[in-house]
Length: 97
Image (cartoon, rainbow, N blue to C red; front, side, top):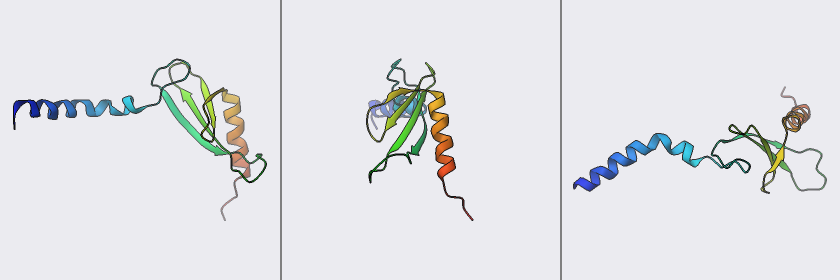
């Protein structure tokens, strides 16, 4: 192999540990790559045949909660709304025998 091939091999080896940080989503508020996905919960209060799923995210940098309904853009949420949605989903889940 030529010398520049070895440079590419070593560069790919060195960048591998940083890939998860580079693949994270950006926070809409602070624009840092610290957005973590919390839960995807089904909304049982939704009317009609369409299923509604609420996806919650939290930014580790600015500590802001976000909520995305189905695949719509994220909106600012709160910890209380997240906890209420989790409690409601757990209360409506069927109990396994």
